[in-house]
Length: 141
Image (cartoon, rainbow, N blue to C red; front, side, top):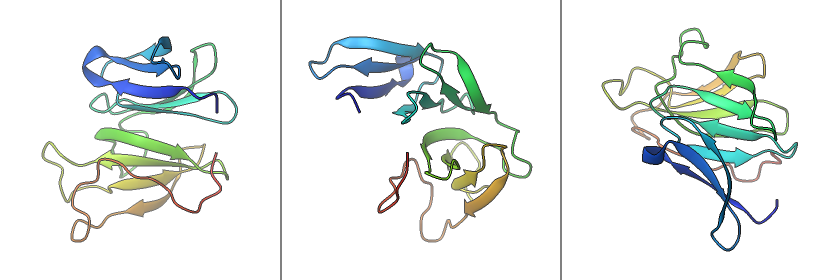
C-alpha cells in the first residue's frame, strides 16, 4: 500500500514497520510477535504465535478486534501464524499444531467478524503442520 514492510520480530516482541530504505517507522509491541498485514482500512492484523491470539489494531495502535485462544468453540488457537482478511470480512487464521497438538486441531480456520467458525482445513495426511499460507486468485483486502 505505501511501500512499507511489516516484519514480525518474534524474539524482539514487536511487529515492526520498515520503509523502503529499511528504516523503522513504526511498530506494535507484543510478546511472540509473528506476522502482520495492513488492511485496506489502514488497520493492521497481527498474529502472536505462542500468545495464542490474533489482534486487529487501528492506525492509533489501539486494539479494535481480537480472537483469543479459546474464543472459537471446539477450535482452540495454538501457535497463531499468519492470517488473512477476505473481501467478505471473514478472516483465515493459520493455527500451527506443534507442541503436542499435531492431528488434534484444524490447521487453517475461517471465521466471521463475530468469531463464528465457517470453514476449517483439517488434513494432516496431505499437509502435516502448516505454518503459513498465501491466497491465490482471491479478491481479498
